[in-house]
Structure formats: structure tokens, C-alpha cells
Length: 192
Image (cartoon, rainbow, N blue to C red):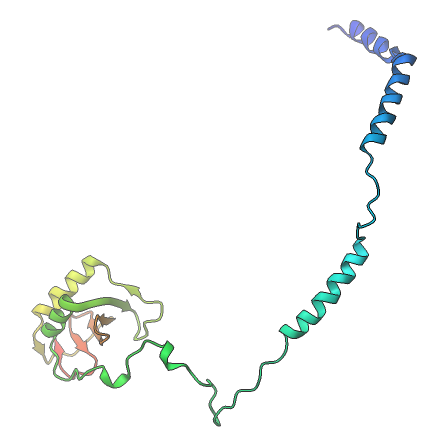
């Protein structure tokens, strides 16, 4: 549109107004609609302040009863841990870990092949958050252990720590050094 036509159109539309008859009928219709839609006051409506007061009356005694201090537990002197329900712990006593003074690397590899539950690897002798050994590394480790012979060589280099957990609950910790020497916890023998 040209600017002149556009200007004429805008001024014409600004002067256009609804008729008086239309405005009167619209006003009447809106008044009827307002009467029909306006809700009647309910005598059972609870105001926000009353509802908050009721909630406080219920919540305060409930909070007090939940925060009541527990009854004191009698403890032996210096018994910082308290009593433990031993039936809830599925653990083997430390005295049944076995005697590993005569175990060989070959016997360990056979045991790993037969009844291994999981094998963990760590950079330290602590296995908290240790990762499981993958299949490829497990096969390589079994091959290394099965071919290892007793040696007098001293371990040297970086040390990888392993913890083998077997299906019967027995645990064997051993280490493999960078120079290939294998040591088993509880045994004085070394294998290469």
C-alpha cells in the first residue's frame, strides 16, 4: 500500500465506532452473564488464616513427638560403636581365611579358574572402590600364574594389587610386580 492510502485507511478506522444499539445490547448481555456465573458465598469456606492455624495446631505436637530424644542405650565403657546385630551381617570370621603359607601360584590359578566369585584390582592394598578385572586381563593373569615357578628374584617396579573372592567366601590377596614377580599374602614364597 502506498503511504497515502494507508493514512486514509487508518484515519477512517479511527473514526469508526460501534453503534449505540450494539453497545446497549452487549451491556445487557454481560450483566446477565455476570449474574449467572458469579458464585454464591459458601458458609463452609475456610479462610487462609484459619487453615494455617489448624495446620499449626496439628503440626507442632506431631513435630514434638517425632523429635523426642531416643531412649539411652547402655554401653560398655569405650564401646563407641554400640551393639551390632550380628545376624544381619553376612561375613566370615577372620580365622577361616585359611593358611596360605604353602600356596603356589599354580594352585592359585587353578582355584581362580574353578570357583572365582570376583577379582578386584587396585593400586594400593585397599580395595574400597576397586574395579573388577575384565575378562581379557583375567585370562592373562591366569596364564601368568599357571606358568609361574618359585623364584628367589626380588620384586621391583610398579605393584598391582589383586583380591580374589571365591564362592566359598575365602579371600586371597596377591600382588604382581612390574618385573613379573608374584607374591601371595600369607606366603613367603615368590613366583616368576
